[in-house]
Length: 117
Length: 115
Image 1 (cartoon, one colour):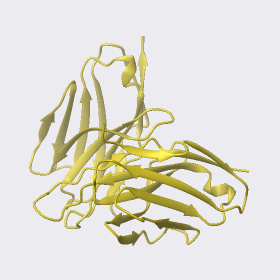
Image 2 (spheres, chains in turn orange, blue):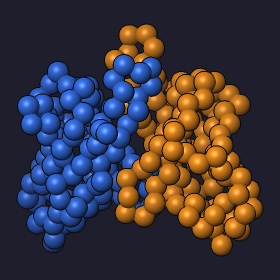
Image 3 (cartoon, helix red, strand yellow):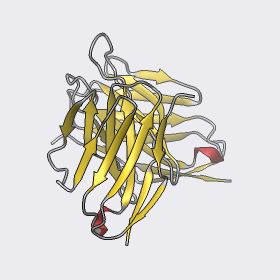
Image 4 (cartoon, chains in turn purple, cyan):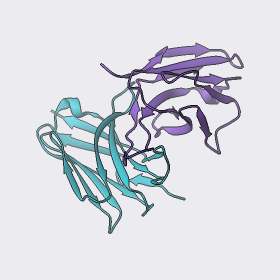
């Protein structure tokens, strides 16, 4: 089945130790998104890629970076995790609206729960 | 700025009854709305969507109503089941003219089912 896959599902890191979260998709979607979701809150968009074009949200801290080496994979790098970065990190994909598509539904992966010690 | 908000943070419903979850939005230019269901420890799951040129859309046991006059969205779940227990988010595409959707999520409503 086509899907959005996130690895690992649970990640523990130490304060200040770089960590990378992974997302892959078999939907062949053009757009990949990263969200941060803290407990009992709505997901908050960090950034997205349309193909290779990177789009950062204005309030995303510099500590968060992303890479998309190809259509299927996208990575979230947290350079120096702080205690406040403990959260669920969600990857999502969408087709994108270039062309005749006029709605653009986002489909989410299961998330990676990050713990910072 | 634009925002999507929910009227009630929690909703308790008797099993078998219908559930209605409400949502208000503030961006009158929004063209597309989505309801997501999020179970504990999982990612949001797409339930149903509606475009701004519609006022009602039905799926399997779910109906979404859109009232653009008062900028209000609702999700109706028929014959609520224990498996419907989750947090429900309404979401709004805040950039209708962008090449990729940019979703703003509401704060979420937790639906619990009484046996």
